[in-house]
Every structure is written in C-alpha cells, then in structure tokens.
Image (cartoon, rainbow, N blue to C red; front, side):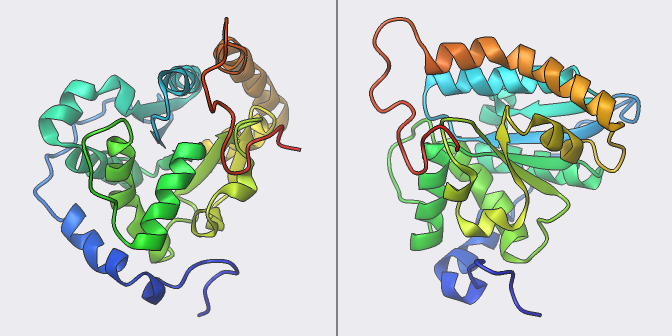
Length: 245
C-alpha cells in the first residue's frame, strides 16, 4: 500500500527509524491500576512542548478543563516527581502504552516549539544533543510516539491540536497530519468529539461541553495572549503563527 499524500517514507528517515527502538526498549514499570475507568470515561494522554511558563499554564488549563468531562487526563505537569524518578522516556512510554491499551487517545498539542522539535527529528533523524532544558520531556515523548506514525498505526489512536492565533494546523509537519489536527478553541466541538469517540455525546451535548471547556480556557488564553505589561519577546511568533484565518 502507498503512503498517504504528504507522509514521509520511513526509508528516507534512516537514522531515525534505526534509533527509535533503542530509545524505547527498556524495562518500564507497570502502569498503576485505574479503578472505575469506565465511569470516568476515556483515557487521554496530553503531550506538549514547554515553550515557556505561560504556555505551560495554558496546557494546565486545558488539561484541567478536559478533566471536567468524561475523560481521564494524564499530563506530565501533574506527575513531575514520578517522571523524574522513572526517567522521561520510561514515563512517557508507560503512559502511552497504558492509554492505548485502555482504548484511549494520545493528544499531541502543537506549538511553535513543538513544530521546531518535530522538524529537527525528521530532518536529522536524532534529537540534537545539549544541556537539559524545558524541551527535553517533549523530545522523550517524541521518541515513544514516532514509531506509531512512521508505521501507520497512529490514525484512530492519536489526535493533534494547536491554539488559535499561536499556530496554524497547516504548519504541523505532514507526518503528524495523518491524524486530525484541531485548532482551539474554534474547533473545540470537533476536538472533544474525537477525544470521546466511540461514545461521543449528541451534537447538542457536545456543544455544551465545548462551551464549558472554552469558558475554562478563556482566562488562561487572555493571560497568554494579552499579558500585563510588555509581552514576552517572540510570543505568538513562529511557523504559521497568526490569527488562524
């Protein structure tokens, strides 16, 4: 079978494909059991690049809002001690495995920093070495999710998202656009419907939930895009930044 239009052939990624099993093949701890998982809805693992502290607060606001729905959200923001003890690659691999084994969904939240790191992986085949920094956790998560995209296993198990005015979905590398990429909050109903498949609520109920999440997100969005004083240099700039129109 041919690859979807715009997808990079794995043979063109040589060193990346060869290096991924080494990064992800290790003794991972058994994920903790989840009681009452059906009552609490589908599992969702949220992956993102810590571009800056303001973006992390925005991610935290989205994760908290999603928890008000029938979703069980996992994000490294809430598990820093556990991730530090296990190591980032082991923690992300265990979370991904548990989420997908339970029929959950992995959410890739794209930002200018995330797009730059994804492009670096795809162009160079490996993550550039360097000192520990805020993007290290996202690099670790990429090492564990890339095999699913390279081997065509991502559709139905992954979705992408980005924030209006910060990044346009077309700026996401083609390999990751083999799954739906939603712009938030303008496409919240479709995004929430994808997260809650195959038991998405009726359209009216879905719209209500989208409005609920949008209200919860708005203070964090206002703070990020209209901070008091002088905006942080470079905020809102980057590949595809704009008003999303």
